[in-house]
Length: 401
Image (cartoon, rainbow, N blue to C red; front, top):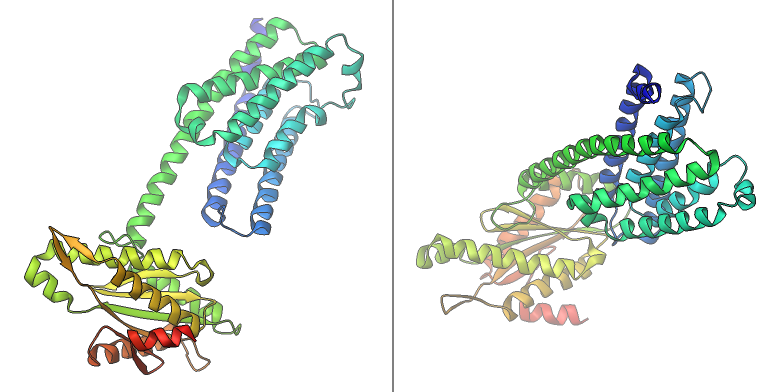
């Protein structure tokens, strides 16, 4: 037994352990990167492609671990098989927990039928085949439960520990059926598996904490603290990206800029806290209208003070006019009440589209800014679209067309 335990304390074992941590870290990094760009709202084929990539990452990780192990042990897979099995079990567990999509789940459930060189025919001849069926049934339930409760698993220590323990127990049962390892050695291997998983868990928790800190930093850097919408710094980045993407591909891009009418009066007459509430109110309703029009991929930015900019991708001026009208109508239909006082908040807009003559986003901004001031100089509570100013009553007729 002492010789068996000492097998876990060699330099090669440390190498395998560190590589396993590295693979789990890579899986986690890729998972968070994909989640950042692909959501449930993404098109089906985008989501399917992401799921295929994640599944291939899991398979590649398992194959890399196998090649590393065989290289260290001169091609003998059964040497230190206990460590190799624990490493593979750990990677597969983290794979379906972190990547968490149906293809990964199905791949995990297929692994007991893929690793066995005899394609499991010997299992059918064994008297232990009912044990295999029972163990596999428990594996199926465990994998499906973890898949359905990913968020709980990541924050609940005891649920996570129970799930990983059952997963490890099932796998070592399947391995014992196929290879008839010494039962005592199998139990010791399961204990080492729990130790490994504890260490892997510490690494994963610290990694998630780093991602959370990065996300907080990203929010502070790109979003306005008062209104919660994107800030001017983010506008500088997004506007350049939008210009580069749409300038040469003949797809429509429309930009709108709006200003809260007589905003200074809210601060002077009611105080700056009321002014802040007005800003939040307007930003919230404008953001809500953009969300209700997903085809525009609308993004709202606080440019500064009481000025906001909206970038509408794949949207021509006609549809942008409807969006502008809906924002203004919502603002009129949902007035702001503070301390029993109704505050009538109006806004004026400037709207323009990307043209072939625009050399940079600065050209678009200067034009839309000019149109906004044209609206303000025309009595406010109106909109100027490509140099033509409309009251919102007259704009209703344009939208109806």
